[in-house]
Image (cartoon, rainbow, N blue to C red; front, side, top):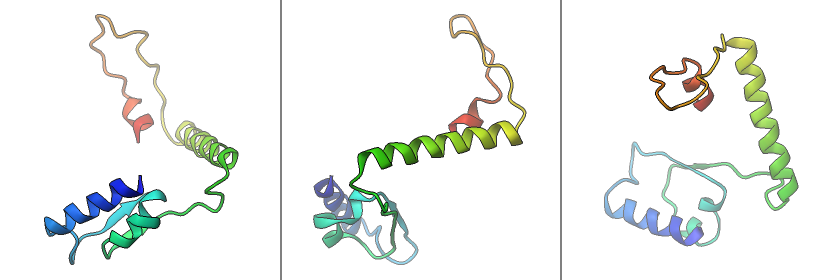
Length: 100
């Protein structure tokens, strides 16, 4: 929430984490209202054009995931994941790519 972000910014200022050499990457909520009044210099955030439109948010999120998966399949060698967890000690080699 904006209040939580403001509290984090205040604590960061107290811990000297807001001066030269620090950059803050934040979401839309963390750079508005009460949060913005406490925000440190070096704040970088993303404000969505359709920030109040829930269906546009969902559409954008699905599009990002779809594009990421498409690029993954086009650029990487996708291996078959393990069929289960119980008794399986094999690590899925492609797993970390999905997590990125």
